[in-house]
Image (cartoon, rainbow, N blue to C red; front, side, top):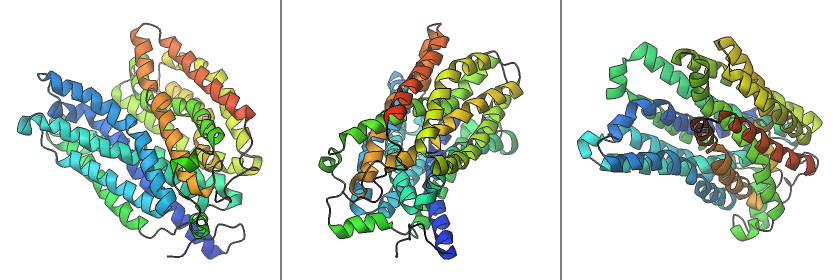
Amino acid sequence: MSAIDTSNDFTSADVRKRVRMIFIGSAGNLVEWYDFYAYTAFALYFAPAFFPKSDPVAQQLDAAVLFAATFLMRPLGGWLFGYLADRYGRKFSLTLSVVCMCAGSLIIAVTPTYATIGAAAPIILAIARVIEGLSLGGEYGSSATYLTEVAGEKHRGFYSSFQYVTLIGGQLTAILVLLILQYVVLTEAQLKDWGWRIPFFIGAGLAVFVAFMRRELHETDAFLAAQKAGVTRGTIRELLKFPRELLLVVGLTAGGTAAFYTFTTYMQTFVRLSTGLSPTETTLVIFGTLIFATLLQPLYGAISDRVGRKPVLMFFGIVGTLATVPILMTLRAAGSPLVAFVLICAAWVFTAGYTSINAVVKAELFPTNVRALGVGIPYALTVSIFGGTAPAIAHAFKSAGHEDWFFYYLAGIIFLSFVVYMTMRDTKHASAMHRHA
């Protein structure tokens, strides 16, 4: 299948092809993150089926599944699928990652309960989450690489922003499925009995659909050129030739991923416990703020194409450092859904400065032969350290009676990333996108 032209002088047919490839390339991202958030959203209903309180071993497995399988496997997934993307092509890696997510989701959907097969049930669930963790860790680097290579140079920020459009879209879809099943289709008893399996069947079905769509993906010009040039691709040895860029990815990601997981994953719990809103009000507030966040992504991506990546990142770093503590302190005292909605939207105004362009900035740091690896591995490691732990750190501070400390912790991590943004070059004007090695 022919490659897609990624120059700036392209016909209307090239534009249609480009948009189609962006859609197919990012659709898998939505499915992957839908499956990830579906597990969290429906855990309340299926947890008793796998982790009965009478079995302490099962309880320990519960903790291992929730943490290790989702985050500790992501760096390994970043390496595995990054290697496949750099070595055998973006299309192959992207297709395989969504097939793995399909397998993990389907396993959860059909696994018998603890009452039926005993301790084997949580073990099988753990295996499914390991597969999903690998897939999720690999999707980011491969999709970020593909979207930036498919996009034309003049609109690279805009097109690559759709990675987070679909990422947030996955969470929105999971919440929407939860609301429909909770309030329209099933009773509470039905959800706990068998209804919790439905979202995982939906996820598996969507993954199969996207896998077939991804068979139509065109390989990128950049990868084909590197392949033709015969350069060494996808090796750790080659990747280690870029230590500065690897450290930059860590610095770029730390503050942004901590903010992202705070204003997505942790917000559901924070708003519910701190503001006194009902579960339904809380869910609707989070749903509305995620729609707002989705709309910001392409806007900020387009702005970065005009003014550069660095000013947009600097905006996130400065405003995030100064505004995080006041917003979270005010949100804690919010007494109405509207106030909570406005405050979380205010947080997204600066957080989108990171989420919208972080993929393109990282991809622009590395040459083609190690681009997927260079984006995927340090990103996954940093997310595991600063992103996935953000809710746990917040809960720990709250349990210790010092909830405010987490607010300052988050502002401090954002400030550290700001220092990186301030000292780095603007990748829009100093990009490695056209280098093969």
